[in-house]
Image 1 (cartoon, rainbow, N blue to C red):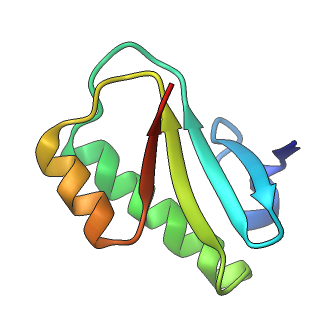
Image 2: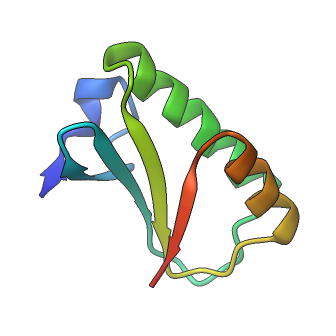
Length: 84
């Protein structure tokens, strides 16, 4: 079930999927690799979501390969990565 990103003060282009009461998934559909710059943007989006709804877990679902440094960075921020 898709969720409106404006409810969390996010850009309209961000795709959010509700996976449970306290879980949101950020969907990234592209072919190019997810690099550290993208990881920093994802963490900012997670922080915006947690400002509106504390105790919400966030994960990322992507079709693109993820840089190993970015994987470590996201895991250290408690963001799971799901590859499609």
